Length: 127
Image (cartoon, rainbow, N blue to C red; front, top):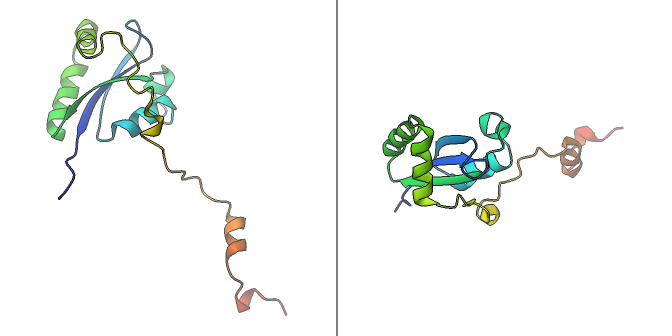
């Protein structure tokens, strides 16, 4: 049986109450928050140092997309009320998430080291 998927509408901020808000959607919240916190994706969130997430979870992607569009259309005070209803003190909900998401190192290996480990063929032997 397939594991049920979840979709998240999240708001990232850089400080308590008074600064920039970014609303997004993802199917992998720990990965996405890791990307924002470590500024791996250039753009708005890395430029404004947005590192504190607040989120809502949905079972269907269409519901999450609809909610994201709805929240993006709100004025700041309405977004603040939503955040404070879920997280009154604006704590960073992902403070301890380093253990939840550990990215795979996809750094390419040094080609010379790869070639050294390969067995020599007859064509490689010089006469």
